Image (cartoon, rainbow, N blue to C red):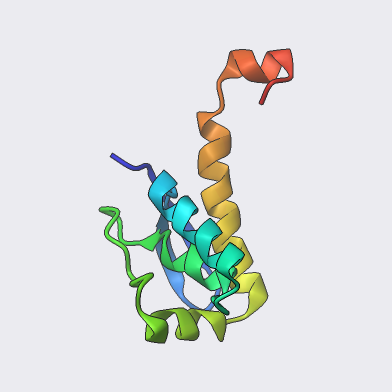
Length: 102
């Protein structure tokens, strides 16, 4: 199961984020390379903002959802993605970190 963590977002309250799947990362990379006008930041938030059970709150495939997120403040979306990044930091192998491989 994907790891889920609580995050407090000003103006939105207490929410949760889940780690990105490799499938989602690949889709985001393809959208970026295709230059289809997708907002990568909004797509990333749509792919990670979830309820406490890991169920996404937004549909990455919904132009309406992505447009809504794209209209939010940069600081708010950045806070959400920093929480996602913190999930991956916690997963780093301590031996790799000690060896400088993280």
